[in-house]
Image 1 (cartoon, rainbow, N blue to C red):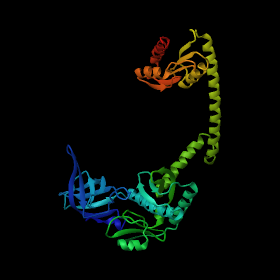
Image 2 (cartoon, helix red, strand yellow):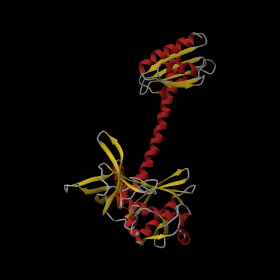
Image 3 (spheres, rainbow, N blue to C red):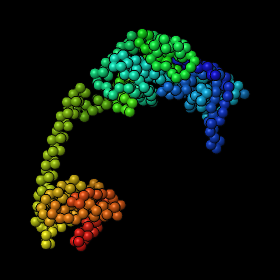
Image 4 (cartoon, rainbow, N blue to C red):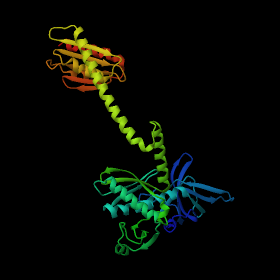
Length: 412
C-alpha cells in the first residue's frame, strides 16, 4: 500500500515517488481526468473531517521537458488505497515530484490540532464529548453531546485551550496496538484492528487520529470560539484557529469600526447606541401605528357619510393608489364596525392588494369570493367569512376584481 509520508512529518512539502497505477475517471470530448496511485505520498486524502491537500505532481517527458499536473482531489478507495485526481495522465512507472500547497496544509494543521485541544478542553471542563468534526474552507465546527452550553462555559473552555497553546506543549505521534491504546486511556478509538496512530498533546490529550498536526501547541497560534447552535445530536460549536482566527478578528474589528462610524461613536459604545436607536425606532413605530389608526378612523367616517345606502346595506368599493395593504386592512376593520357595511378595498402601492370585509350582522362569505377572484387573476389570498385579504400581480387588475365582487354581492 502507498506509504503515507504525512503520518511522520506533517510539514513535509516536497517529496519524490513512483507512479504505481493510473486510471481514467472521466472523459468529455478530448478532456479527461485521471486517478494516479503512488508508492509514497505526502498528500493527505479527505478523511476524519479534514479535507484533502492540493498541490502539484511534476514529471518529465521523454524529451526532458517538465510536465506539471495540478492535484484536484485526493481520496481513498474502499481498500484504503490513496488516489490523486489530476487532469493530465501520468503513466505507471514514471518518477514524479510532489509539491504540497503548504499554505492550505498549514491551515489544516492549525484547525485540526486546535480541534483536538478544544475537544479535550470541553471534556475536562464541562464533560462534553465531541461526536463529530468538520473542517471547512472558512470555519470549523465540532458537535458536542450536551443539551446546551452557556457563555461562561464557552469562555472557560476557550481560555483553557489558549493557555495550553501559550505553554507551547510538545505534540508527539505514537504507534501502538489496540490493546496498548486501551490501557493508555485513549479518548476515542477507531473501529478497526491493527496498529493505531495516536496524537499526544503532552499531559493534556491522547487521541487516535490519522490527520496532519502541529509539532507543538504553540504552532496552533490561538483559538477563537465564534458561535454555537442547537443541532440534533447536541450543540454545534464554531471555531477558528491560527491565521484564520487573526483574519476573523480583523474582519470583526473592521465591521465594528464601519458600524461605529455610522453613529459616530467608539466601537465600545455601539451596544448602548444601538439599544437607544432600537428604543427610539419602537417608539416611532408605535406613534406611526396610532396615527395610521386615527387616519383610518377619520377616512372610514368620511366614506360612510357619503356612501349611498340600499335598504340595510352600505357597499363601499374603492382603490387607494397611495396606500399599502396595512392601511386598507385597518380601514376595512373600521368601516365594518358599523352595521350593514361591505368593504371592497384595493391598494396599488408596493404590491397590489385587496381586502374584502363585511359587518358582523351580514352573512356573505368574503373568503370564498376573494379566493375565487384573485386566483383567477393569478394571485393568492384567502380568509374567513367576515374578512379576507390577498394580492394580485398587476394593479390594473384591481378595478375589475372589485367590480366583479360588487356584482356578485349585489346579485345575492
